Length: 248
Figure 1: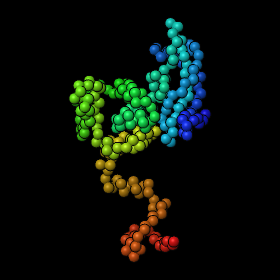
Figure 2: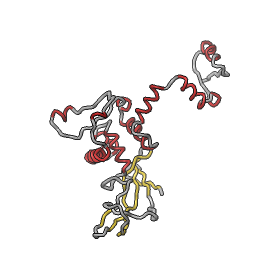
Figure 3: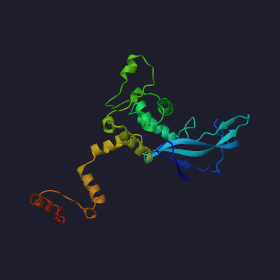
Figure 4: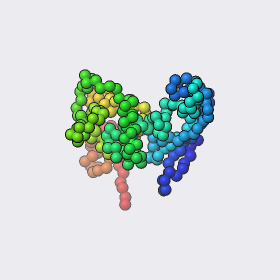
């Protein structure tokens, strides 16, 4: 069930209410084994924005009781650790932090900058593999925080290629790219794969794809300009040419 609620004055946010599928047994978060359900609780977690609107998902989680009598909230792949955001929303936030400052991400999503910082740190810790210098090959540009280095800060070091950073300079460009990657389940190296295709594709392959997917009869091509000088050039395409006169 989908409904709208006013999150702030003069703005709307989406609320998606989900019903639990009782066919699946709840498991303990420690042993991942079936257990006794003490009771169910409803919780709202923030998810990816939809059409620029903030989105919350209301889900039902089981409060379990293990053999020692401890009450624990079940762990799900959909909800990130802490239970306030979805896992994919945390991935989205961490992705934005690769190209934007924490303050810019905070302002763009309307979340406190401390929260953005903590989400990014936890996602990096859980997702990044151990550093293996021998695998760092073919890097073109590397970003270095010179201020933090000069101050002697011992932070987690993340090495990533900045070759395409200028193509996604504004917050909206970065958010759109990451949104497409998450929406269409594209691989993490989607941009690198796309760039490789663009750099290596041949003219014959382009012509084959154009012949397969592009049918000129399905389109109307409008050319604006001096008819006398353009007509000889247009006739070389072998397509019917119709002249239109615009009136005020």
